Length: 154
Image 1 (cartoon, rainbow, N blue to C red):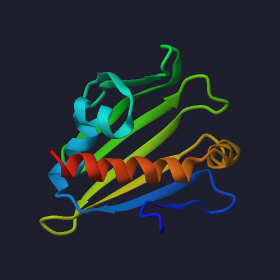
Image 2: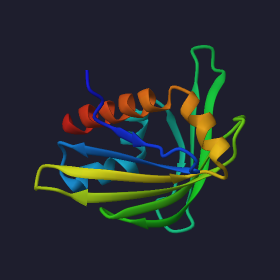
Image 3: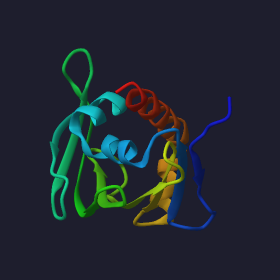
Image 4: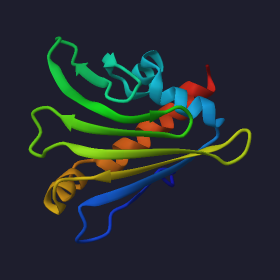
C-alpha cells in the first residue's frame, strides 16, 4: 500500500520536508494539531500541556501497560497562527539526538481537502540521519492515517 505522507530527505542536508494531503477541511486539520483531546487520540499519547500561542509550551507523554514512560517530548511554540502555521521546537527526552525546529504550514486545497507541509531542521545532518534510521517514515504515515480517521469521525 502506498504511503500518503511523503518524506523528502536530500542527502547531505540537515533538514527534511514532510507533506501530506488530507481529505479534511483546513479548519479540522489545524484543530487536530491544536486540540489536546484530538491529539491524544491520533497520536496515542497523553497531552500533559498544550499552550497554543506564541511562546506557549507543549508536552506529551506515553506510558506502557505497567505505567512506565516510554515516550516523552516537549517544546515551545514560536508561532501559532490558526489555520495557517505553527512553528515549534520538538525535543524527545532520552533520545540520542537533540531538539529540532519544525515549521508546519497548513493549506486549504478545496473546501473538503487540505495539505500539511512540515519543514524539520535538525542540529546536524548526522542527527537527521539518525532519526531516519528509526521507523520514522512508517510512524509518521501511521500517525497521519490515524489523524485522518479520527478527525473524519468527529
